[in-house]
Length: 107
Length: 388
Image 1 (cartoon, chains in turn red, green):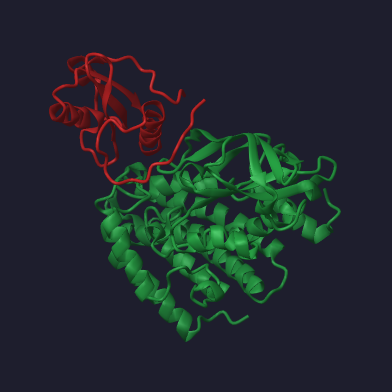
Image 2: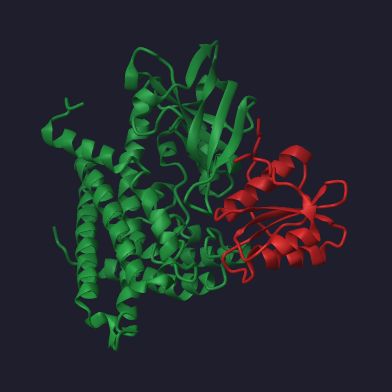
């Protein structure tokens, strides 16, 4: 599995039509592909990725693209995506709940 | 050996049991089923509580401010602390504190000032860097990371794998080969600051433990002062080995605690759940599973307490610790598996903790030395040290 998410971007409508109640991680981006938000659907999210992506899109009207990965390792993959984003861009794309993030220097 | 708990042990065990049931279990109702951290405000509140209980920093020696509690009692506490969903790898979410890296208690005064005391105060974090891509079960031979002396410094090149917490650590213990011809007597332990040029956390390794990851490290011409050698040059393997042996007892205790909780849940469930007009508890197939669970739990408990008792009395306990790790990890896996079976579909759902315990318990047969290595250690003790 690549450290950086490599799944294709798709429109919000297409993503919502494809998504179901799966566990996994996702990213939202603007039309230029700038990542605006990174999130995950965990074991207590009733509608899984479909529900949390819909909620995130509602909170980020500037987001026009979505990509996602289905994974049961949603916690560790979520943290990995945050750390990689910091390694690549120097900062997080959004405010996150208080978790202690590590530091990655991917090759 | 007196098999009865002392009055003090009984009191402490009861106190920890109440703490888990009244403080930890209610919080888990709202946490993600794979969570391994509490919200910061909950953690702070509960750390204050364990300090009031006099049980914070259980594994810290009294000379460094820890409570003076013997190893048998600490093992009993560890069994209680793991009796919740995250209990196997995050017992009570760390609210009882930890000793950090116990190897630092043997450090020089200067090293203690820089690394040990800040760690005990919660200001610094460390990691333990032993396993490599070339292997972790036989570190004395598998270590390929090299340290070469250059004036007053050592230059380290190589890598580590399966290292917990390195991405969040301020420093780590890194074992490197300093003499290629001396096998286990050619390994040295260095204390390495993670902001040292050439230190890289290259990637996260995702595992069955969905809330916790390991890391892969790379060292590129990493310059470390000779003053950062922990212990003696070429004597690092003894440091690693001591840690591995001691760690096996609490490792076993965690498995026993989870097994006890799983069995408790099954005992509560099977009289209520009916199939074909009768409670599950009336079915012999179910009764035998419960009986086998109970026997597994008791065997593992006594073998683990025996190891703790020997260590507590200063007797050799390598064989006993290996037996505890071996028996408790395998027994714990069987108990959780049987309980899952009794709960049926609910057993595999994230609504209940069994699926998490099942995944995490599987790792226990590999972590802290695979069970095949434990059997090797026991056989070596039985047959003589020359066994290879």
